[in-house]
Image (cartoon, rainbow, N blue to C red):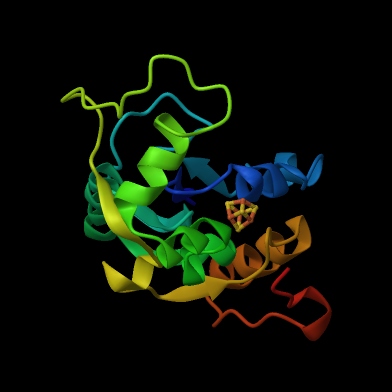
Length: 178
Ligand code: SF4
């Protein structure tokens, strides 16, 4: 039987959700008998190819996030918003209480210890969006896996259900938002 293809990415995330995924520890070995990874921080694949499942960590804070997220939506049959940031913007969305210029000036001009103050403007840098968005503001999302981060057991639960062809359901003991 061919393996289920999974792609993962971190947009405006902290990689904590990926770390939690790796918290499966030795259970990853058994999982890898059934799944293979496409584009992911776990691999060296640069673009998302056709996949069964896309796991998205992080909200959307810049134009590159939008581009990557759309690539995942175009290529993944099932897209899962993983963690608080992807679901509602998470802690990074606290910047939505300020305007973007205030944030940039606080970090690069008026911040403690800033030397040679200037707001970075190299064309290589992705432009920030005015606000941080949950991923469902940009693309359709099939499932939400809450938590900051979700536990390894929660990842195993949702993937186990999907691998078995079942509608995912999280038991209460794995359902949390913190
Ligand atoms: S949900 Fe929490 S752990 Fe996951 S990327 Fe956001 S801040 Fe990090």
